[in-house]
View 1: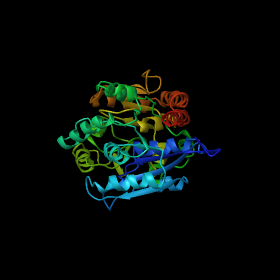
View 2: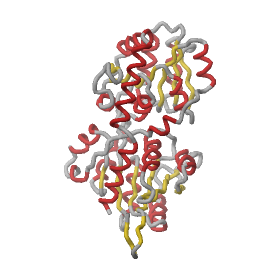
View 3: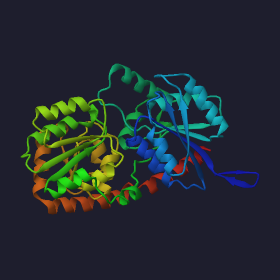
View 4: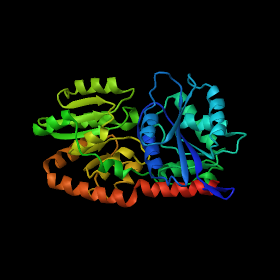
Length: 378
């Protein structure tokens, strides 16, 4: 908070996210702002809309939560007018801190805050596993840009360790571990009709929620499913992405057309999660995955790939959940088959997972740490 003329004023923070969807980073922003002390922090949620067809769902969600929002229209892959428009918004709204999420937001935010009194911090949510040349160059530029920001706040130890290797950046790093909005999870009671029908017919239901991109490893999940006795199994793939068509072809080629349902992006993804018997995250690379935290926070048994981001949530395999070696669809299939056959083990895994998340990864804890960081910057 600021004191001015004898009055205590809240810090004004602009959260700059992506207009493309409501995935991990966007839900992370919503979880954070819901739990910030609104007497201390006044939040505005903004996006840079570079394509007129984008709906910017984070803006609608922020409005529903009662937050002020802003859309900067600057069409094109990198339209420099976005810098000017963002700078004008920062001045007009008297923004004290710009908090950016994503390489494009980081770069534009850095340029927009130059010559202003506005501080800027970035939260890197992760990197691409196998980026093409253009994306790789963007991500390299993004890392270099971090050297010019006031603070860089990675959400996992793995991301922190990687950034700490950049000369001169360590002094700007500030680790605040990822978290999940447990209140949002606890409110979810109903499950979608198509999933309810499968349950009534006696199917064992498992699924994945997230983007359909290479680093998420959905192809590994499909190959594991192909090794199972598929009678009375349904798998729901919740999400969109550039690999959707190729994954649908793979499912068809593997004979999974009666087993796997691609739902596309769903607003009610947590309602699907509520109806899952088992959640699977086969990623090749993660920070601390929000979808895995949500599943565990809901008390669902989980199987995830044995990578650092997942291992931080399942430090004791067999206690909070199961891990399988990256790319190893055969072991994944064995874990699925075992848990399908043992409902009592699924139940105990889910309860221990839920306890672990509540103790270590609540959004309330994360919000308090960000409040302290914001105050320290000002």
